[in-house]
Amino acid sequence: MSLPISGRFIIIIILKINPTLNLNTMKTIKLFITGLLFFAVSSAQAQVSVNVNIGTPQPVVIASPKVVIASPPEWGPVGYDNAEYYYLPDIQAYYDIRLSQYIYFGNGKWIRSRHLPSHCRNYDLYRGYKVVLTDYHGHTPYAHYKTHKVKYHKGYKGKPQKCRGEYRSHYENDHHDNHNNNGHHDKHEGKGNHGNGKGGKH
Image (tube, rainbow, N blue to C red; front, side, top):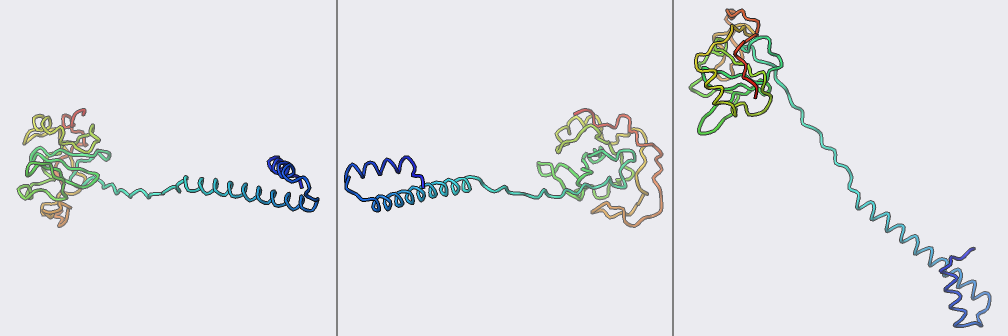
């Protein structure tokens, strides 16, 4: 068994201290030193391994929430499947197509809701004009409300629009979700081209 340099150095020091040691004693000392050095090296390696494992955190995998994108409502104009917002000039409100939410101003702030405010519950979404904001893809269309309010005033009408679904005169006021079909169709025959009805570049 070959003894490391450090072990040989220790034996030399022992021999200088006591040169009368016999061969058997020297072998015992050699084995003891070898075992001691082996233990020290093993302990150091184990400590390094533990430190490395502790210092490397395990990756945390977080599942992304599933976002459900709604399709355009039946009262929306045809030809704009990729649009995200409508501006409703007659009631000065917005509609978020992706989230099926109305956005209107009330109590000093902009509110998102699946229902229109009480004073707009009788508004006819099928007959009312929808300005399709084709150029806006953010989260706060009302940031341009002052421009929209002036450009698309109450009673504004662009080119004729045709609704995606059949006209329903008695749909539920709370949801405007096209219940109680009365069998009439929207009389507008446009192809979805709203001309000046774009929300402009934002």
